[in-house]
Image 1 (cartoon, rainbow, N blue to C red):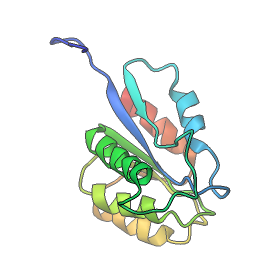
Image 2 (cartoon, helix red, strand yellow; image 1 turned 90 degrees about the vertical axis):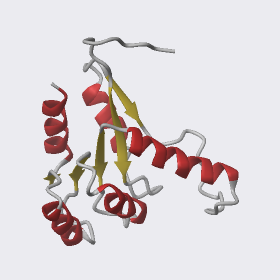
Image 3 (cartoon, rainbow, N blue to C red; image 1 turned 90 degrees about the horizontal axis):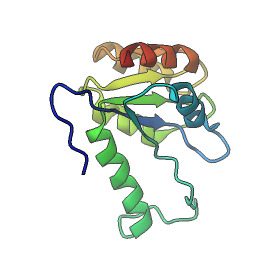
Length: 149
């Protein structure tokens, strides 16, 4: 157990949502983790799983698959910030689903570079719900760092 008493600071939880499509999406999460390494009092919730097997049947009856999806949903609900990167050369249907689920949460920061096949939908949704939207990962990370100061 970790008890934190007032007025001591406590860690902000940052969930790294976004493109993970095998072969199509770079490991952008590693770049974010490296950029934030010097910042104290944060916890990064990274859904990229070391033992992921793309052959797993995507079914509620598949224990490992269901565990992964439930972990991601629980972690996003618990997060203070959801940092989402949608890679241009992907379709990222789960990321779009998560954007819809958390659009009203005021937790989202989105990076969606030119070239993403549904960028217009992302732009309109971000404008509608006043979600910060960035064209480059560098700009989005800079914004995140400002929020964490």
